Image (tube, rainbow, N blue to C red; front, side, top):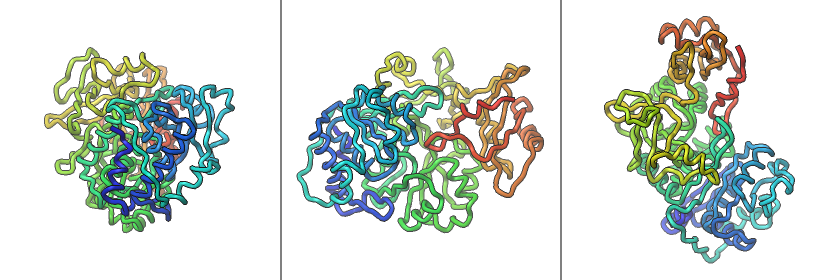
Length: 498
């Protein structure tokens, strides 16, 4: 088994079909597979061998994809590093993963620490300056003998994907060929992806959502991937129209921005499927999207440790507010703090078991043991099933607010705020308070041209939910601190004091 063989499949059945579109450049399946062979041959030539770890520190670009599959084709391991990371973060990940090679770009090279701080790193390749990487796109059509993919066991690791670090020091989740291939197949089946599809990706490829749910699944199904360096409203909307994108993958923030930009709605007519990830989608946004475009926003539940997709909110029996039912053979259950299974309707921790669950955290046996108890991945998320088996995410266990001895989940308060006409985006957190222990605090970004006072929003919430759940304070922001994936960083919000 080797994950990179999915490109061989595309090159065999659809050699002249576009596999990748980046700006004005295109790569057929035959050309992309050829570029992956060039990378694999080159890395083997400079000494990279099976099980070696290669850190990939670059933004979205064709060479990222070529390097990723080229490393995997050798049986080596891709260490995904966010292009948003600075020197100290890069130093930690390269040393923690014991990477022997670092691949980066000119724009990011200044962040690479001195070699004395990276004692196990043997070399660094800069894409624009390296003799092979710099010529990949120009030499894509060269005929060459295919490089045989290294035969790997299903459970051998092919990617180390670091968790976002929103709750602490990032840990490297070891994802196997089986983990990623199973999830790619699972996504294709549940989303009904076909070769005629054109999928959009502006999310960072180093993250499991973009790298696996989007990239791997689209290429596995022999569809076309339209890649962008990031989200630029004008560029992305134009790209959707010109490339006739059929599948839109985004996060709640992007859907909100698109809804609030009616001038672009005519350019989204080719989209027939929309999916949201990273964090729970407010139900009000799902309703607005359906009213505007006649499309559901499909959601799933997943995490880096479960290779992305774990549940899926269905094509045919879609339930607003839910993240769906367990996908395929994946098992999901809800337990109390003592580990007892809970019935439908009761809230507890979400546990996951299946072929999508990671091998563990790289070189961190204690951390692995803490989350992989009894053969189940303990997510740290609170959820509940309804009587039909649909999962609802309540919140992160660590995000729960205890105010005056009462438990409050931020998501419930956020859902209420999103129904207010003036609120464009919000996030709720508990801030220290002398009397209550923690006070429910809402951070709000208002829609352009709309206004609302702190008192009005608090009064609005008290009219919708129990008074003790309503915010004690509203803090207005122009924007939010975010992860590279667009998820709001609540730990940064908690730095505010009352």
